[in-house]
Image (tube, rainbow, N blue to C red):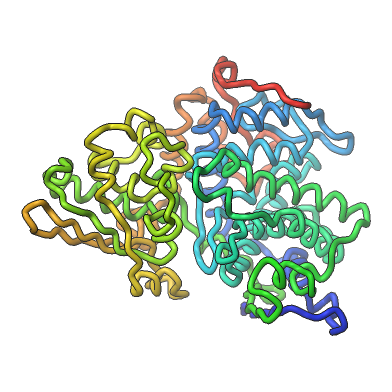
Length: 508
């Protein structure tokens, strides 16, 4: 049975045993050798395929290419075989922390992989690149890799359930450093003492502000989780060498909670698996059918439905206003409540448009579809009729949708809302959607065939057909893979694809 751990701030003179600290509790979960349930194994396979899909789609984009070039400029460290880099030949290796960096950017760049939203929000698939990189470097088999990934997801989901970061303008990757460090600890079979030190260092080095997701969003949005994964690898390395961490990192008088989160009087109830309890957190997460912020997924599905039912909405002359009644979070993060003029700027970056629900709803409504490239082009964003309609779309916080957004009941939790469209003649069109079509409770929940179809769709422009088949075959046998096969768990681009990508030079 899940155990809720009470976490609060302790003054320096108050006793707090190491074994009572959240970082230690996380380490104990990571060190617990509990078996991974078949249902969890299947979902881990799905997410390994999903990560490869979105990495393939982003392989030639500038931030991904820059990160890849940085990784290629670093040799394999002396204590292992190194790790693969998405797109590169399988024999081309780099040090694991740099592989975690390059592959982490590739996975996150298009904001197109899995998500979990609760007190905080997250993309738990960001755990996979650093854990996989270490597995390849040290020669772990598929069973160990599965155990490590199960832990990474579990810790991330549990922290996200309990501790809100964004209210204090701290970027959500502050939960990723600890979860990735814990996952690597499980992978390597490390003792709780070592994992505890790694978790503390990973948290300490990955707390940063939310400005990376505010205003004119920069390319750092894709780099932030990769940086957290890289820091987790390095934190584990230091902990294995006997180095220690700031302690207590969460509960200390000058720690993260006291000064970065709810303050010295704060307390949280963090749910973690009890000893011997299976790690099932991944089963509460969900992937994306569309390349956009998760809270836009359901709205895209509703917009394409309205496209077919009400063709008159495509012409802005027929529309007086469109109001999306939604949760607090959607309104203030990707809606008009953010107060960011960039969310209505047709010259804004892809990263900014990805976080603008007025833009996303407008394009999905007009096109009846959403495409990971075509829907973000400058020409598409700058189309006159789109800009006119876009400026008629606003969001409004609705208490009931906010309540459902925060509900802990999976049958009630919702990420959509209700749309009220007022036409030029005064009539109204009203519709609503609770969850995306691909959500487990949606109209068309994603299953293995959908993950594979997504991978084929995104990979076909840049991977040979035989390479696509090779990766799928390998991934579907994940828990049975030998160490040599884990070393092949990457994707290799078609000849010439990487040559067309930018190859910027830097310090290294």
